[in-house]
Length: 156
Image 1 (cartoon, helix red, strand yellow):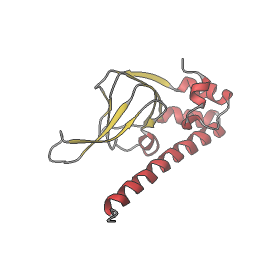
Image 2: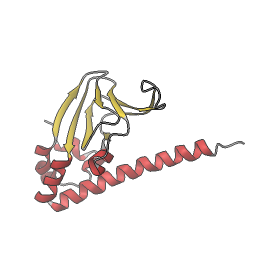
Image 3: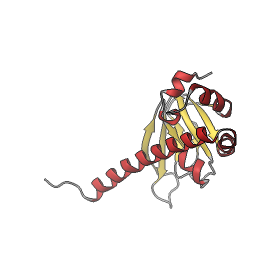
């Protein structure tokens, strides 16, 4: 079982007490994926957050809709990183494919269980949502920087 110290050290669980983490731990499901296995497929329905606790994944995106096999890697994530935040919150189709780069284990939290946490302890639910919002904001800032540097390259 993944312990309190490990969970507490990651942004998703920041600000939660040991008791709060113990309360939400039963809602976190463990899943294992083999190297090369697709965890999430672009366009599929998500509604689940993934927290990597061993291994690593690549995030790939279709770059040409007329050729569905043409993919571009947009990120790699490792231990302590999360993915699926947007699908957990807005319940829209996944915007990219996630594949295991090596044997990978994740904890998952689905939309229904997040709702159950809100009914059990509103403060804990609020902290988790704030942490998710912070992570989405950090990613948006990185994308803004990448987008602006590609649109306005420095021509010194």
